[in-house]
Image 1 (cartoon, rainbow, N blue to C red):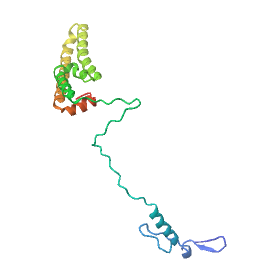
Image 2 (image 1 turned 90 degrees about the vertical axis):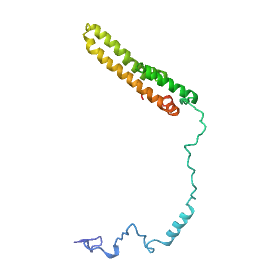
Image 3 (image 1 turned 45 degrees about the horizontal axis):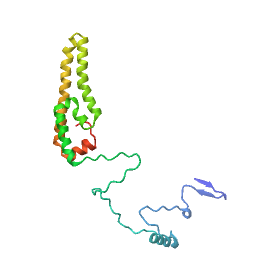
Image 4 (image 1 turned 180 degrees about the horizontal axis):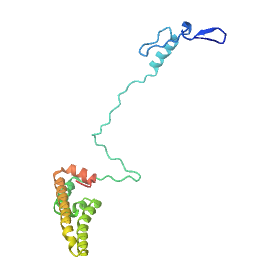
Length: 188
C-alpha cells in the first residue's frame, strides 16, 4: 500500500524505510556508546560521585529500655500507676469477692468497673424482683415457670463470679495489674 507524502512522492507503508528505522533496545541491555554523547556520561558520573550522601547507620530505638515519663500537658489523662505492694492485696480481695459475692457484682465495683457491676447486680436483684411481681400478678401461676428460670440465671451469675475469681487469683500480680487495674478489662 502506498500513500503520497507532502512532496508528492509515494511512501510504501508496508515496508519500513531503513533511514527512519525506529530502534528499541531491550530493557536489560545498556545503550550503545555511540547513541549517548560523551558529555552525558561524564555528567552522570560526576553527579553520582558528588550527590551520593555517605551512609551513616541510624541507631535503632530500644523499646525495652525504660525512659522517664514525660510531663503531661494539655488534657491528657494521667497515668494509671498502681503500687506493686497494693496489687497483691487488690488481687486477693477481688478474687475472694468474685468467688463469694460474684453473683451480685461486688468484685466489679471493687475494681472500679461500675457498668459491668450494675449489669450483674440488676440481672440478679432485678430478675428476682420481676419474678416476684409477675408471680403476684398471676396469682402464683407465673412462679411455676419464673422461679426455676430465675434460679438458672442466678446460678449462671454465681458460676461466672466463681470463674472470674479463679482467673483473678491465678494471674500473677503484674498480669492482674496490667489487665484489670490499668487496662480496666470488664469480663474475665
